[in-house]
Length: 110
Image (cartoon, rainbow, N blue to C red; front, side, top):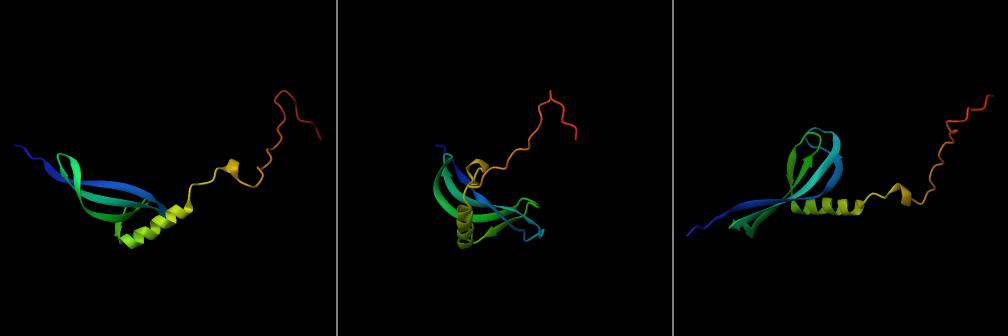
């Protein structure tokens, strides 16, 4: 009888924060990810073995592991930012478009 088992990781992107990188000291986007490791039987994840969180700098590529409580605060900050508001739905009036003469009319001379 053949018995297939192994390990698998599942990576979930929780959000993106704009903050200072610890390595390159550049303000850049930091990607918050959650990595869960599973024991698999016949390629099906059966038992979760652990969870880790990481921040990855988009400028230099450095990934640093962070504590779960810190990751929870960062995830709450991402959720508080919400989705960007489209320009059409803002409360302020849209800027007036400059008036342009049609191409068949010549501009008036001063």
